[in-house]
Image (cartoon, rainbow, N blue to C red; front, side, top):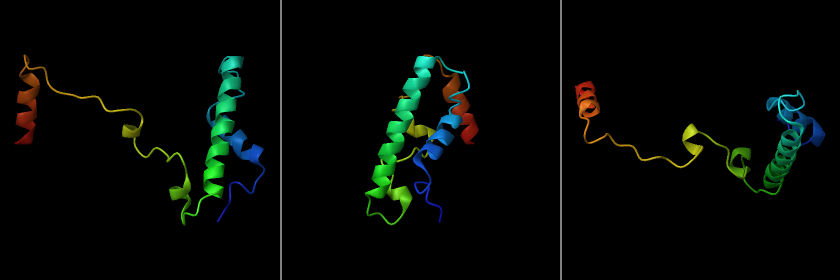
Length: 97
């Protein structure tokens, strides 16, 4: 099994930065520095949660838990049809048949 943290910490961080297109002139210099700092901080947190864990599997040790669905992005928004417009309700009822 490959241990990502056995490599020099900077290599993995550089790969993460490349995934965000940092260092390619895409972002304003100040934003790029801020993003780099946040990524380094978060990588450090994840690394510590893995190293200090007693979990058998890495997936269970990672804190915060990685996103597994786009539903994890933000709180859900209630959805319901407009009571004045029966077209959606009619469409839903027809598709159930």
